[in-house]
Length: 202
Image (cartoon, rainbow, N blue to C red):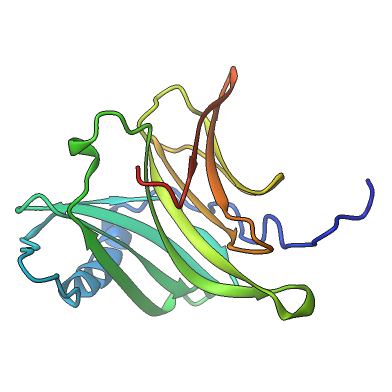
C-alpha cells in the first residue's frame, strides 16, 4: 500500500466488549444517566417531561475510558440522549461521568429516516501540523432492518465500524479533519444500504 496523503487514526476505539447493559449493571448506569438528564436545561418553551425506559447501546472504549450511550423518550415527546463513561479496572469500574442533551426531533415524527443517530465529541486527536480531529461518539438505531454492520467513513477512509446488536450500533471515530467530515454507512448482505452525513438534517 502506498503512503497516505493525510494520516489519521483509524479503528482507535476497542470494539464492544460486553453485552448490552442489564440487571444491576444497567441500574448503575441508569442512575448516572438520569442524573445527567436532570442537569439538562431546556430552551424556553420546551418541557422535558419525565424520562421513560432507557435504551442502551454497545460500549466503546478509547483513551482509557469506556462509553455506554443511551437514549430515552419523555412524557412530553422529547428524546433525551447521552452517555455514561467510566474508567475500567480489574477492581471494577470507577470515575463515572454522565452527559446528556435533548431533542424534540424524534424518529416517530420522521418515517422517512433510515438511521436514527446521535453524536457527541468526547476528545481530540492531533495530527500533522497540529491539526485536530474531533473524536466523536456516534450511536443510533438502524431503522432499515436489513443492515448488519455500520461504518464511519472520513472521506475515502473507513475509520471505524460496529456490528449491529438489536438494531443498535456505536461508533467512535475522528471527524472534522483535513476538511473531511464523517458519513455513517449501513451495510447488509447486498452491500451499502444507507449513507448519511452527520451534518445533514435527518
